[in-house]
Each structure stands twice: as C-alpha cells, then as structure tokens.
Length: 434
Image (cartoon, rainbow, N blue to C red):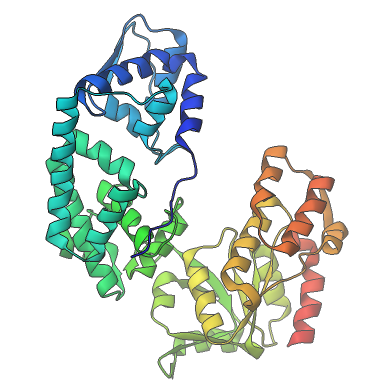
C-alpha cells in the first residue's frame, strides 16, 4: 500500500513559536521538558506554585475553568489533550518539544531503550494479530511515517498501554470488516456487532476518532475536520450515522430502486411539490432521473421556494442544499450525476458561498455549471453589507478559475451579494433550458 497522505498542516515549529510567545506557558513547558527527560516519555504531573496572571489565563483557556488559587497541578496528558480541538491538533508533541528547546531532548539511555522496546513490542503484537489486513497496514504505515493518528496513539500508549491495545484491536476489527463488506449498516448496530458496545465508535469517543483516522488513511483522504465530512467518510465505508436529521430538499425528481420506479417520489414529482429527503430515503434508491437531465440547485431556501412556486404547473428538477452542503445533498447529486444528469448550481456572492461552490465544482467537475457566478452578476446585485478582512481571506484557497476571478472582484469591492435578487434571471434560464 502506498504511503498515505499526511493529514495535518500545522508544523511543530509553529506550535512551538505559539507557546514561546506566551509567558503563561514558560514554566509549564520547562517542567514538561524535565519530566520527558527523566521519564523517557510524555507523562507525569505539572505543578505551578505562586501562579502568575498569565499562567491562570492559560489554564483557564485550556481547561475551561477559573484558577483563583495560588497553586495548580495537572497531568501532562491532560495538557496535551487540551489542544485536540484546536488548530494544533495532530502535531507531534515530541518534535514540537525539540523545536521549543532548540534541541532534541535526551533521555537516560537505559530508560529510552526499555521504553522503545516495550512500545515496539506492543504495536508489533497488534500488527501480527491482523497480519496483512487493512488494519495492520494502517498501523504499520503510521508507525513508520509518524503520520495520521500517530501523535494520539503515542500519547495513549503513555497513559495506558493495555487500554490502547484493546482500543486498537477494536478499531482494526471495525476497519477490516467495513471495508471488506461495505454494505449499509447503522453505526451503533455495527459498533455493537464488533465490540458489544453500541457507542464504541461514536464520534466523541476515542474509538470513533481512531476509526475515522483509519478510514481516512485507507481511502487516502485527509482526516475529516467537521461533522459533515465525518458522516460522508463513514457513509463511504457503509456506516450510517444520523440518517434522519441529515436531509436535503428536492422537487421534480424520479427515483429508481433497481429498475423499479419509487412510487413515493413519483407522487411528489407529479404534484410539483417539494420533498424532504433524508439520508435514509436516499440510501434506499439506486439512481435519480431529472427533467431534461438537468437539476437546478440553490443554496438559499427562499430562492428555492420562490422558483418552485413560480414553476408550480411546469416540470423542472430543483434541489435546495440549505446552505452548507449536507451529506444527503452530496449523495443525491452523486446519484444524479451517475445517472447522466447535469448540475446547475447557484449560491450567494460571499466567501462562504464561494467556498461551497468551489467544493462542489471540485467534486463534480464538468458535470457542474457554476450558474451565474460571474463578476457581471455580482455587480448587478451587490449589497451594502461589508465583508470583514478575516472573511475575505477565506477565499484565498479557492481552486476554480471562475471563482478566483469573481473573488478578486469581491475583494476589491468588499461587499456581499445575495442570490435572492437573481430569481428572475434563474427563472428565465430554467424556462429556456426546459
């Protein structure tokens, strides 16, 4: 198996620079360095006597509680874990220490040798159990390259090697099973079957996070940072999470399970009424047919409703993504494209709207038309709502040449524009194309 793509973007020296810049971290980092050299691993307890205001603020920010007393103590593992939900998540803490102190910290040779031997033996035994399976290949690669979940596994090993062994065994069993037989199954049921605990792979549990790391490595994807991306990755492996509240809205769509048309979708299509489609509904069908093989997708529910109402007695296929695109919308669009359909996507002219459009264009390529995303359309409907500099910077990562051109105009102007004022233009296009 080829080397998996590295999933973190924040380098250790940047983390070190952040910590060095804040005086509240100075005594903490000094003690962590001393503990590391004496123990041979990241562990032990930090104690701060006669705390400064800067140290109190650091602890309050990390641990989400006030520190009014003169002294405080906490585990090194707790300190490292506090960065899990920040931009520094996943940075190799040992490499960061070397950058912070300007040199690689040294252990006593006998302590280091014993630690390395025991750690290698622990992971080696797990790899041997699963041999050449996806689980074993995942562990082998991350240990070799120190990527993917390596920083987390290293920290968990220091906390409790036996607990980590049990956890990795569950994750490897889960990974091997779901990629070998990627049939649709609810995540809680799958977890029960694999571990006898329906919550073992919940997203807020260690097992759930590690399963996501393993799946992202298997499919050669970056680790999913938000709930929607996590759900999409799970669904790719056949695991369904939150199938009812994850939905999209469609109008004028015909669905087929095998060669049989879905009667429920037919009724709404014939009446021209919008249909709320959950992940459950979409998972039950194989392909989706659109009027004239075109579907018009709107970011904004108001625009969708207005167009649907104006086209009430005429056939056309519409979808409302309801802002940030959910997994249900993506899967529905996937089935439309796989059935030969073309997507026309219209959204707002602001950083968030352009980012959504860019993601969809990257996913569907020539099968998606960036519909009325031109500088001319923008100038026609430009609002007086100013966009902050921090939001404008979000557009720096756009990939689509069309959207890059539009972003340049928006940056120069500094104002948003909203697709509600394009209803007549959209309607005119739909009437011509249908």
